[in-house]
Image 1 (cartoon, rainbow, N blue to C red):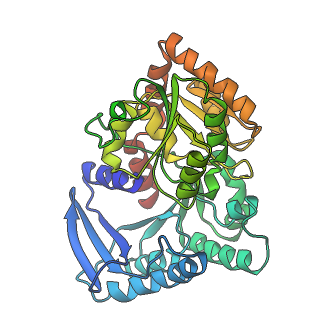
Image 2: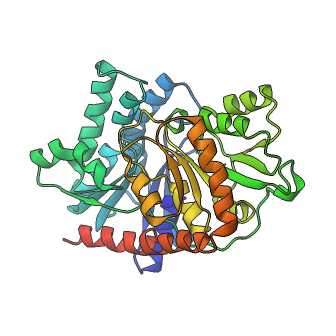
Amino acid sequence: MQLRDLSREFVRQGHSLTVVLPSDSLDQAWALEEMDGVQVLRLKAPRTKDIGYVQRTLGELMMPFSMLSNLRKSPLADTRWDGVVWYAPSIFFGPVASALKKASGCRSYLIIRDIFPEWAVDMGLMGRGLPYRFFKAVANYQYSVADVIGIQTPGNAVYFDDWKQRRAGELEVLQNWLSDAPAGHCSIDISKTSLAGKKVFVYAGNMGVAQGMDILLDLADALRGRMDIGFLFVGRGSDAQRLADEAQSRKLENVLFQDEIDPDEIPGLYAQCDIGLVALHPKHKTHNIPGKFLTYMQSGLPVLANINEGNDLVEVIRQEQVGTVATDGAVESLQQMAEALIEQCEQDQGLSSRCRGLYERLFCPEAAVKQVVGALQK
């Protein structure tokens, strides 16, 4: 959704944009189409979604080379670009960005939203052995291609000290962004579900290891006696089915899981809810302002967050008074905050307006596009 919104804003500001994407579903080498004024070039590449970690790594490693091979067969093979912008994750796009940059003699801008493999080490998913060194080398190569790297919070600058010393690249904070969108149709009608009539805590997005969402089920369990409160989880991810099965085994009647919905339906979903949930595993040491936080602010939803200590998002939530945040990993703390936030929603008439105001001030895509274009034109 973020890349879609950024692409639309580039076009709105009068730029000609081509988005190059890998696709494992193509029968031919490439496919060219237009969407919302954006030229989209899909290049056949290995599958990297919903498969085992080893297969995914091999697929990701081969992906950029497959894309480059198939790009040479496409109508855009000889196109010269004014600038190259790419987004991490994934850490494997470096060869594509490098080839496009060198062929066109242009500047490049890397938007970092996932500092891998550092977060995986923090989570205990890998040590600092051979796999870490491999992924770190891939990430460092990607960094080396960039003239400018845009990180999402000041706290993440420490991870790029070596990069700044090795080359004359620029590092800057590029705030997350999200296009404004009115609440419209949503395929999920809460009034026709078991959560009808309740104050709804909603989580919409990826449900994986990095989110550490088990504590949200523990929270629902702790609040099962509150018949006026319900929890809605919408999305997919490596932990989605496990979490749904766990909720069923605990007989959590205040919890409802739904499949992923179209991003355009999200505002319509949030219009039916009361509080947005943010979850990041407490073992994280990197700083992260999740895209879902922006969607909550856009919709005027205060947040209940369980995130890692020291994350820059902690101070954003507290200073802007747009919800409550726990960093101790204790369900008791989260329960107290959840119940207090429900009461605040009923009494604080300015809460929703503060959320909207924060979105409008910091997270609109217009500022992001101007910042990226300015960096490419230097």
